[in-house]
Amino acid sequence: MTLRRTVAAELRKTATLPGSFGAAAVAVLGTLGITIINALSVRGALRAGQPDRVAYTSPAEAVFSAVPLITVGAVILGVIVISSEYTANSPDAGGSRQITTTLAATPHRLTVIAAKVAALTVHILVTAAITIPACLTVAHLVIGTPFAADALGSTVARAAGAALYWTLTGLVALAITVLTRSGIIPLIVGIVNSSLVSASVLLTHVTSLAYYLPDLAGMRLIADDQLGMFEEALDPLTGALVMAAWALGFLAFSAVVFIRRDA
Amino acid sequence: MTAILTRTAAAELIKLRSLPAAVATALGTVVIGVVLTAALASSAPSAAPTSTATDAVIRAVPFLQIGPILLGVLIVASEYAGRQIATTLAATPDRLRLLAGKSVAYLVAATIINVATLGAGLAAASLTIPVRAVAVRPIAGAAVYLILIGLLSLGLATVLRSLVPPLVIMLALVLIVSPLLSGYTEHARWLPDRAGSLLYRPDADPTLGTVVLVAWIALTASAAIATFLRRDA
Image (cartoon, rainbow over all chains, first blue to last red; front, side):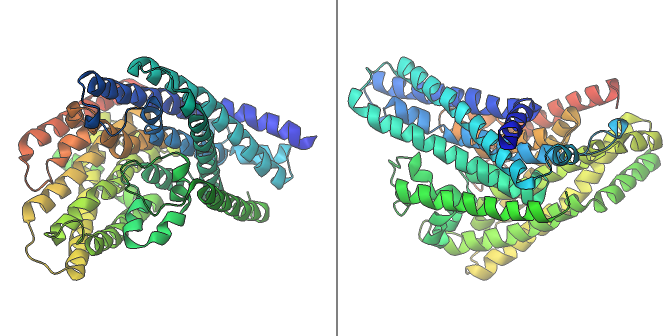
């Protein structure tokens, strides 16, 4: 009962953060924009009769190669859900931190963490449920190829995989922010590693163990890797399990820290 | 006037030095620069047989720019974390001079940090792979680029008066949007970091790139000055 009410409260708090509006805008509009640019270049290549000019021709690829932006959205959301609690108010309004109010309302700390996790998961899944179908529709409309019925299964699987990847990324960002109580470090790490110059990808040149890092473990959930750049990457199921283990491990550790230390 | 600006800049430098996050940024940038260039230098040979220590340093620049970007945001955003801006403006009511002082303080700090980072990175790379020749021009260009890109984030943070939004915007721009866009359209070369990258690419003419990057900074600085002069603190 308490958990249900706390989740409802956290859902509302998350939804009304100005930052979560920004994160959703980055995820939805940014991904849509990149999808349109991708789809336009695919259409141009197809019309010119040179499909080998682009790396792919399917609408699904045009969508899923735009994922770095929505991953950034998930990272931002995961970070601000926690960092907003620790930001001090203006001294004119008492200079307090929201976390003291939150813990006064819900003294059981594990409930607070569980509710935060639930609220973040719901928000990311809703964003994914809006973004992916919208982008797929737009990509189909722009490219103009008829919808291939046999590709439906794999597209749905990849969309579900992408939603799982974003959720787990957001949860890792949330867990790290609980530890740091400030958004700077998790934001930088999260954005760098969702980018094309990811530090984890660099590490793979040094050791293939780097494919077990949280951001790379799940990459096959989304990426088809048509260029064959990541042949050693874990396959989707293993990767998802490794990534989930990272997320749960981080969450468990930060829950213990959150329960034991002063707010 | 110069004497007063010197005092404002000195005050800003003292504030910056006593800001734990700024000190951590400076140290972190240098350490990451050393580790990264050493790793890049040791992992390079298979891909590029003619790689030099300079190459390793240049390839680290996309990561190293996080340091100055964070520094530029921190120097402004720390004023707005509490009401320090009220104290600052009581001490220096001339807002234009305050912005100038902050910029000078940033330039001094960023020059020290970036020169130290690039120098340490170059040393680390030279220890990792045999040095054939060290090209000075790209390294000097990288230092100038790193200093300028942080100035852009300082201007943006002044407009937005907060920590997270300008940080996210700058990082997303230089790490995600610009690499993604440059894959699709040649117009991406007008983005500040793409234009600025001409400064440190060994075979490029840096003139136009510098002009474009400085134009971005001038644009952001004008917006920062206009908003900072007109609105309540």
